[in-house]
Amino acid sequence: MLETVDHIERPDIYFFAMAKNLMVRMRRRAKVVPIDTVGSIHDTVIDDAPSPEATVSGLLAMDRLKGLLKELPERCRRIVEMRKFDGLSQREIAATLGVTESIVENDVQLGVRQLRAAWRREEELATDALKRFGKGSGRA
Image 1 (spheres, rainbow, N blue to C red):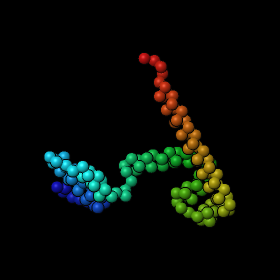
Image 2: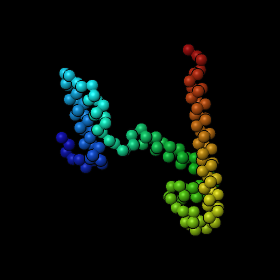
Image 3: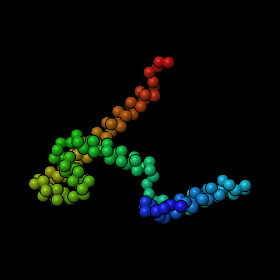
Image 4: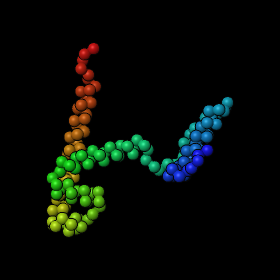
């Protein structure tokens, strides 16, 4: 029924999703339904793609990490980005920035340590805020 199928990135997943939907529709319309039908439908659909929730969660986490990166000292931030995001080796970073490899190694460790600590602090603040939110104001 589609005019074009160009937008379908994974035809195999699309096919199994359509087959599952047809089977569910047939099961709903049937007067007698075997109990094992639902289980077998879910077993046949194999989807290696991350769920929409996992995708959005990953994007939010990346945005949060980028915000925390801004808090690092300039050289440390650049070195962490080059190492962790761009995948450059310590040697390549050292040559690009004109510093020693030990400085690169130390800044990566320092940056990652500071990012983890900042992440934990944000988690604790969020947890505390949720606890306070759950208690409410006590007014009616």
